[in-house]
Image (cartoon, rainbow, N blue to C red; front, side, top):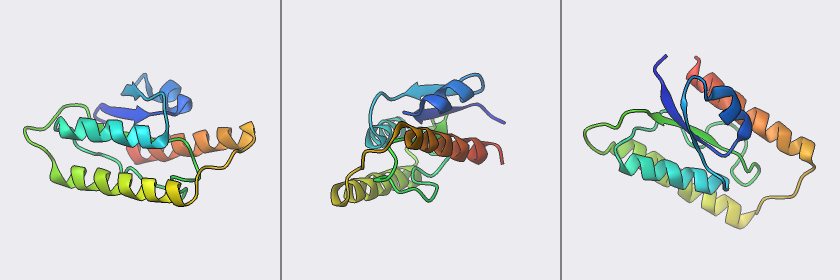
Length: 125
């Protein structure tokens, strides 16, 4: 499989995938990850995984990992831009209407594992 860039705020994804892919670490929220992905799309990178894949809503988990092309395209990919903009809008709306709850550490561990599993399976199908 071709090497990609993974933008993430999930330490498990960073640790387990950094040997095969470039990792952009985001020390911030799920929305911060989406904003960073948008920055790269504006620099002509292509979105390779849907920013809101999986059944856990953005207001339920603080973790997100998104794959983008390692090499930029010649021009802006408007489909990628549309996907990321819509994902940011959806995430903002959900977080505003129902902010994140506080969970025990074990639940945050589960959210990290789920996020890692989603990106791993998306890239290894």
